[in-house]
Length: 202
Image (tube, rainbow, N blue to C red; front, top):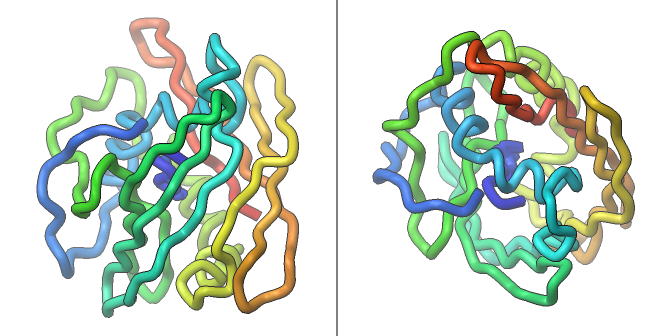
């Protein structure tokens, strides 16, 4: 989970420096789309779609935190396949009664992407599946929010030209160890460049 912007996760999930987060604002679809556009490196690292496997994410550890009405800011520690460890901050945001992975950024302060241009040909429809899937599978996000899961481990990855899947294990918290999947779909911009969007967390 780099930008893990379940994301994301948000995820999320590329570790970059971003602008300050408005503490109580609910996320819009456009903001969530920008997060995923800015998080291409992390999404690829999570789902195994980078040129070098040394940059693949092996695990994510969720640190201690306190959730607020609209926002949960969670320190995370990310283990890469190369053995390198990266620290960051995962932000979960609440909108209309549901929690969503919003961003994950390098360092210890919460932030969001506010100045990323959305490539021509990509619209918020690219994350429509992600929003509906996160609403339908709140167990994963609330498990993190309630300290039920402290560690996300990537067990395997698979995919084809249009879809990538990471099979994961959630463990080390107050809930029983459980297993899930993170799925990303490919979309092509007008320029011909390909982008990957987290479409399912279940």
